Length: 128
Image 1 (cartoon, rainbow, N blue to C red):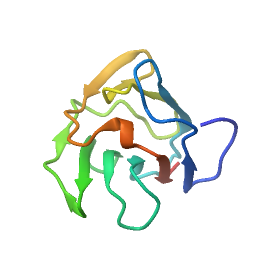
Image 2: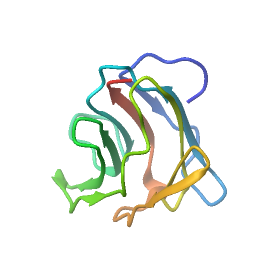
Image 3: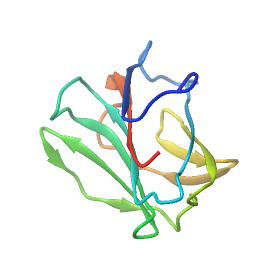
Image 4: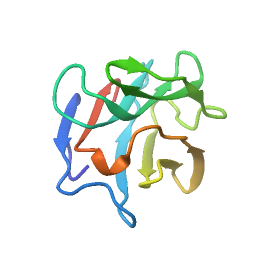
C-alpha cells in the first residue's frame, strides 16, 4: 500500500492481478496485537468473496489462509510457524499465484480456489 494508511483500510486495485504484478504490504505489529488480516476481495461489500484471507494470529502463533466463495469459507491452510513478531515491522509480498513472501523468504504458496484476475480490492484490518 502506498504511503501511510489508517487501519482498517480498503483500497481498489488500479488493475487486475496479472502475471508480473505484485502486491506489497508494509506495516508494524503493535506490542499488544492478537491478530490482523489481509484480504484480496473480488467485490465491495460485507459478504464479498475473497480470493485470499491471510490471517496472522499472534494469539495462536499461526497464520491461517483461506478463501471465501459464494459466502462460504473454504478449507483452511496453515502456514509453518509465525513470521511476525509483536513490536516489529514487516513486509509481505503477494504474487499473482498467491505466493506469500514475508521479508525476503517465501512463507507459503496458497492453493487458491478463485481466479486472482477477478481480485478488485485489497483490505487490511485489525491489529496493525
